[in-house]
Image 1 (cartoon, rainbow, N blue to C red):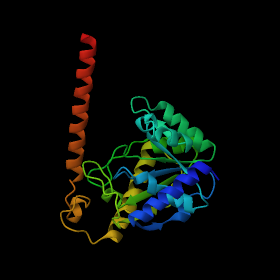
Image 2: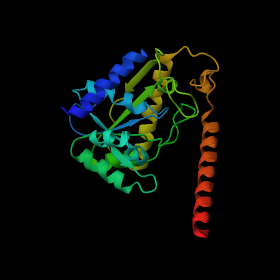
Image 3: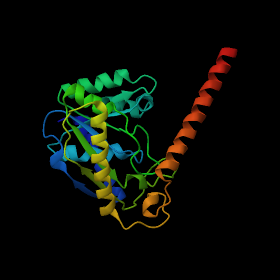
Length: 256
């Protein structure tokens, strides 16, 4: 038992109760009851990780060490909590240290949570995956644990206002069968993507019906979310704009 993590879980459960969230959790038996596992989960909103850890907690009160961007750890309020929970900071400019930290956790028998998509999918469909989760699994010998969260985008996602009050939303969390760490990183990443795609489709089917035009509903299901192609174009434009701002700041710094 970890007192800090346990108290955070208790606080989260009270908040979920206050929001009236309705959970349906499946596949708990697919989380390793002991030993390591790379918990790979989809990214549709800012609170995915709070729900992605539920199956592990139900499986013998196991805790997931999530990989999160370094800026969260730099926050004077969130940083101490993240460190107390033994989560792993990720410096996007230099991810080598976070990768090695994650592998060390896995070799010690921990569950490590990672977003293979790296960034929020504005289409709410799966983006292409980075190979980091597969490489961690291969190096540590830990199985991949494909996990899907569906419905969290209704609470808080990119470009939309938060809905943190008593909303009564349904949240589905499903865990697919573990994937053995075999093959090349590319082969293992492809297997992970296919497993998560199938589980996402399953949960999306179970969640409906979907109101037409709603921002949180994928375009393929009649919703107002952009298509995957449109979302990728938006992400590329954002990345280009950020790069231009960085270049301008650096140029101004050189001038000074």
